[in-house]
Length: 185
Image (cartoon, rainbow, N blue to C red):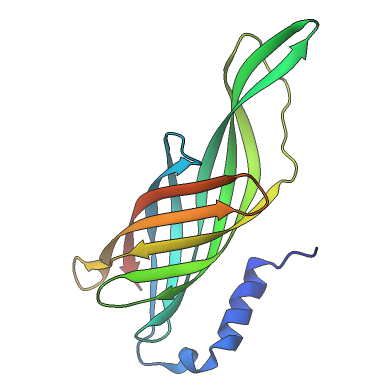
């Protein structure tokens, strides 16, 4: 199956909503987002990222960003007749491409996510692991977020959120919360 690039997805969204491009309610925001997510019911893991958002109308916009996400795994390898237990931390860049609905009560964001494996590190174990990789390197899922924008001043916003991100081609889901600080350009 051929994958669609993030730029192609953004162009498709813009073509589907051409009337939104000429609205008087346009606004662009850039910011940082700090998250804490539980992976399939395990303990919370911190994450962070950069967020970009463009509001086309009073109620519609798109949101994207680049997030750092890590995932711990316990693994066993056979060394002769002995099983060795070790833990690795897989590191990913996660890119969401979201449609965002704005309301006075809460904002709802929904869309695909793409998690790309970038590195690993060993957390513990009786011996050193020399190499480790994952296959596939690209995972995709769906992200749904419920958030509320809080205006701090004319251009700065704080936006707490709840998030759910099941990964479709892997047996895991991320559930958590975050807080974004954004500046209106």
